[in-house]
Image (cartoon, rainbow, N blue to C red):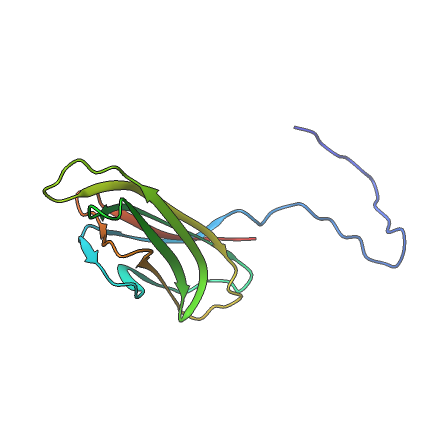
Length: 166
């Protein structure tokens, strides 16, 4: 650690000396999370709620919100379509603020249910809503083809929001 000792600091111009880089920033102001272990099955191409739904009230309009969702996804495939695709989106109130598309190929050998693990899908987003009003965040999914998507219930999924001071 270094120490700076001075007898006097004078501004180059004007009458104000600004010292930056001390204090503030990086502190966690608030944390909220939920887990979800309900299995959701859909064959629809509509956007479907995953059950991840959090109301969050930022403490400062200058803070950043780190939003993370982690979901275990499985898909059903028939004999003619050997792949499954899932689209996910993060909503701030009624606005889509982040969307990802995941395509998978899986050679299914189990003819009884043709269900296969597509894997964990992680969504990570930094939002700067510039607000101290309550905001609703939720995650939705959509099938990318005619096969159904399953959010598997055997491993709880996680949805979390962390408010960080800037």
